[in-house]
Length: 144
Image 1 (cartoon, rainbow, N blue to C red):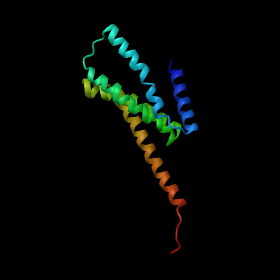
Image 2 (cartoon, one colour):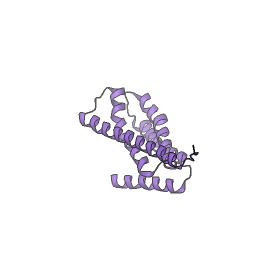
Image 3 (cartoon, rainbow, N blue to C red):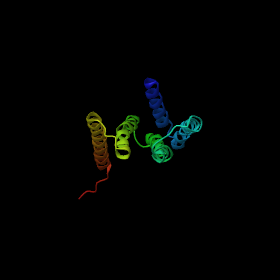
Image 4 (tube, helix red, strand yellow):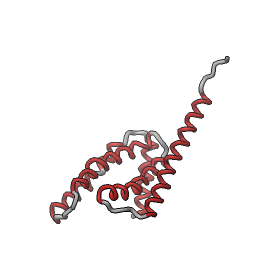
């Protein structure tokens, strides 16, 4: 399942980048099926959740916004860069749980998250610097 999931996400990013079309709302449609399954499970089985509003907030606000942004990402940046942002969910999930439910993440989770966030920041700053350098090279200079 993990290999299939990774392949499908890579294929979606590649196809989205190659087509150049707006795919943001396509990802929002993907939220409908999990919502329907969750609603069915809660109504039929009657799961009890201690903090239901946080779950609703995550499913109704955070997930659709993040899916929309990740689906629109390939229009503006390369596929591998978009894929790096998918990893932010892995980092931010323990932080959300820590902030909301007071369940402290392990030391290794914090170290791994810090590495990923520093990599994303470093890569973004490098790309910004390269873009400015490229624009400066193509700028028309006037003779003095």
